[in-house]
Image (tube, rainbow, N blue to C red):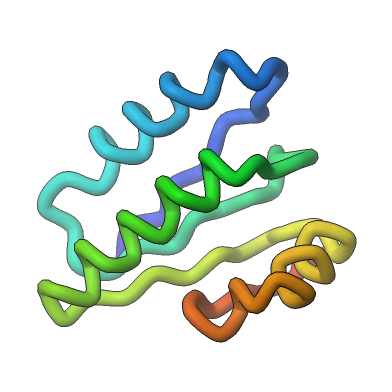
Length: 93
């Protein structure tokens, strides 16, 4: 399983670079954990990138899991039903 530590997004304009980063890091991988330990906020664009990645992995019998997410982000993703699509695990610290 590959662990991808997402970079901290400082501006909304950084989203395309995050998408490229995820695409580069996930090439050829079947099972991935996205580590959110540095992520303070998410946008609909980032969620779209994650959903696309999840679909690609599922098509190849792989899996995606979000780990080390801050509790307030986990709550937000739960409210919008994101946790029904992708497994999410709170930060342990």
